[in-house]
Structures are given as structure tokens and as C-alpha cells.
Length: 224
Image 1 (cartoon, rainbow, N blue to C red):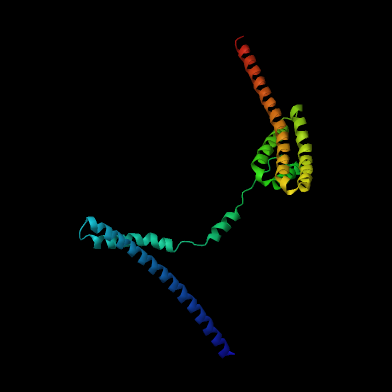
Image 2 (image 1 turned 135 degrees about the vertical axis):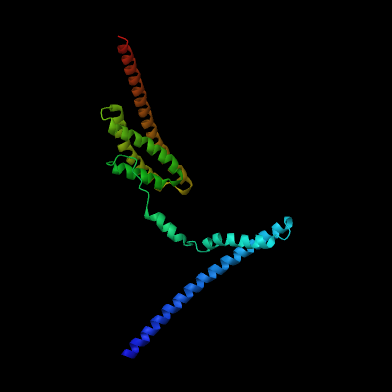
């Protein structure tokens, strides 16, 4: 048993020694390559400088080689594993907050399904979604505005219905009409967004008029 144990110890030490020697050899190879590159660049600088300055090439060669050896060594020993950076970027994913209020799960799912059905029109769908979400969030903050309340109800009921019915139309459309069917879905949702934009504009105009009236009233009272 003692002989076997001693043999295993020798094998382990031999393997460790080989690994260490290989690692040192790889480091020395990198250093040698870096120094050769620096010397080659130094020789190039020396050859160019000798055109203008006679007998200056030895100084230029030595100086350039020494100066270039540092960045060359740094480059040779850089972290060349792109997967590490990629994994690091995945470690901190960006949290995307839903556009709609937190309770509108069905509405959010409908917008996401629309983007899946018409991926080539995602920018237009996102613009329409942002407009509708703006009305919904404004309605949450201004609960007594009946115009906004009615618009919010229309968005919550019509958007899922439009997506469902257009999904069936897209599935039934022949290959030649697929893009037109997807475009029809986008245009229907943009119509709802136009309604939302109109109501938001009316609300903004009413706010401006109310503010103007308040300022006029305050100005008149200040002169009494």
C-alpha cells in the first residue's frame, strides 16, 4: 500500500509539474512574440528615421522597441474571451416596464401578440401602443374625466378584439395576401390610437384653456 501511495503521489506531482511548465512556456512564448513584434516595429521606425537623420537608427531602434514592448505585452495578455463579456452583459438584463397600467394584463398580451403577427410593422405598432398607453395612464391620474374614461374603455375592449379577429384573418389569408392582412391589423390598431390621440389633444387644450382662465382671474384680482 505504501508503494502504491508513493507512486500516486509521484504521478500527481509529475502532472502538476507538467501543467506548471506548460503554463510558464505559454507565458514565455507570449512574451517572446510581443518582444519580437515590438522589435519589428522599432526596426521599421529606425529605417524610416534614418532617411532624415543619419546614424540615428540604433537609438531609434532601441527606444522604439522598449516603448512599444509595453503596449504589445498588454495586448498579448489581454482577455481574449468574448463569451466572458457576453455573459457579463447578460448578468444585468435591462428591466423593461410595461407601457400600460399594471392591471391591463389582457391588453398588454394583445399588443405583444400584434407585434408577433406583424413583426415588420413593430415601429408603427409601438407608436400606436404608446399613444394608447398615454391615455390609459392619464385616465388613471385623472379619474373624473369622462372623455378619457370612455377612451380607456374603448382601448381595453377593442384592442384585444381587433388582434383576435385579425389573427384569424391572417391565418385564413393566402400567401399572396399575408402582408396585406398584417397591414390591416396595424391600420386597425392605428385607428384606435388616433381616437386616443384626439381625446388626449382635447384634454390638453382644456387644460390650457383652464390655466389661461385661472391666470386671467388671478391677474384681475391682483388689480383690485
